[in-house]
Amino acid sequence: MTESNIIKKLQEQEIDFVDFWFVDIFGELHSVGIPSYSLTEDHFKNGLEKLDASSIRGFKSVNRSDMVLLPDVTTFKILPPDYDDNKRKNARIFVDLYEVSDSSHVRYNRDSRGIAVKAVEELKNFELSRAVWGPELEFFIFDRISLFPSSIGAMQSYGGSGYSIESSEAPWTRGNASTRIDLKGGYYPAQPRDTLDRIRKDICDDMYKYFQIKVEAQHHEVATSGQCEINLIHNETIVAADNVVTAKNLVKVKSKKNGKVATFMPKPIYGDNASAMHMHQSVWNKEKNMMYDPNDKVAELSQLGRYYIGGLLDHADALCAISNPTTNSYKRLVPDFEAPVNVCWGISNRSSAIRIPMYSRGNEKSKRIEYRVPDPTANIYLLEAALLLAGLDGIKNKKDPGDHVEENVYRLTPEQKRNYKIRSLPSTLKDALESLKSDQKFLEQVFSRDFLDAYISMKYAEYDAFAQTPTPWEVSMYIDT
Image 1: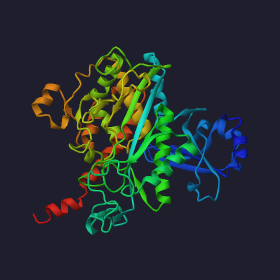
Image 2 (image 1 turned 120 degrees about the horizontal axis):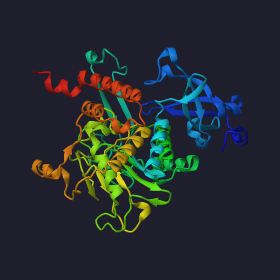
Image 3 (image 1 turned 90 degrees about the vertical axis):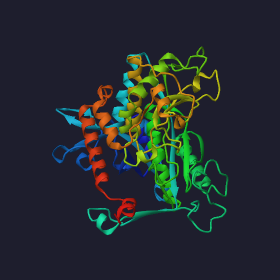
Image 4 (image 1 turned 180 degrees about the vertical axis):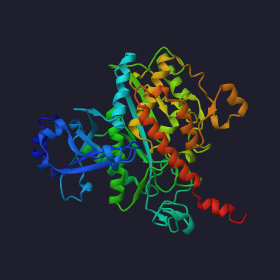
């Protein structure tokens, strides 16, 4: 697909509308639809003058808001019929964001996709050619989520607030003997207890048929009330990130089509497991996996791979502001719910922040590290960029990750943690933002200071609003004091 033949492609496929996709700095998907008859070859070569950036959170002020959307025609895909109730034939294309500078257009420094592109360019400084990512997407599909009051505003704390979750799998639902799943009881159940098997398979079918996104596996996850997981087959940085954005949107569209609601909020249910987005990653020089060393008897992990791990561990606190970017994220990062709490690495150890999968030996293609901290509220482009830069910083400065941990980290005593030099991850979004403020030098060759300042400022405002809002739990706990 090129700019010169995209118009012909639209005509051959009888496309009615093209939806142009991009995300804001927090990863929320935005779209503008244009009839195919209005598009010309010039739009694909020079961009679409269609963006009021002042209306996108975290972008521009109203007095300098004109921006250009430059389509990436390699991302042309025909959308599934569920996107338009079979009424029209629609396609989607990701766009890159450009702003006017003097007489030319330059890539906008708050374009998340552009930040990921710049991070990939850093690989050549290390004689590396590509980074490969395998995201694991976890999410919930509920029958219904009800929020009250329905309007959220300044008066909500006076009139009361709360929410309810409805699911045919929930242990609090009556008359569901054949579909009931208890807290922490949802790992790999078969039908009829797994009420979402068909929907997940429909999602996976559409991923492959319409977007050529390959799925490694899909299944019900540990939590009750419809926790799901879809593992995407590994891909290079930008393609993998585009695939995550596409998959998350498709999950929401297909769930709504089935009369349900999907959420990537990490921890919607108290006392049960939360949703993660584990990131499998490796770095390559052409066809050679530079994290693989067959002579390493412990984990077949190269010295470069160990330094990469050292970089991730060294910057883990700051990374949390990007990998776990919501107040709810830190309700997941607590002990005993299969989420990492402590900064360490292990081999086949799911209680550590970094795991080296060891299903087999002698397999160069599958050698990778799994960073288990992130959750699916993260902006995938920023996440990949930040993880890559942290790992490269570890390689550059030869950061030793220390010994791997074999024990269940949740069960280690404070003294044992000190001996292993294990520290805890931030426990709140505010702590993570403070860490990012003091440790951002490793990002600055790719993330502009302007971007980091805007991101941190907006996230502080989010935390402050959360910290000042009484919750139903607090009211029930303290109303009689």
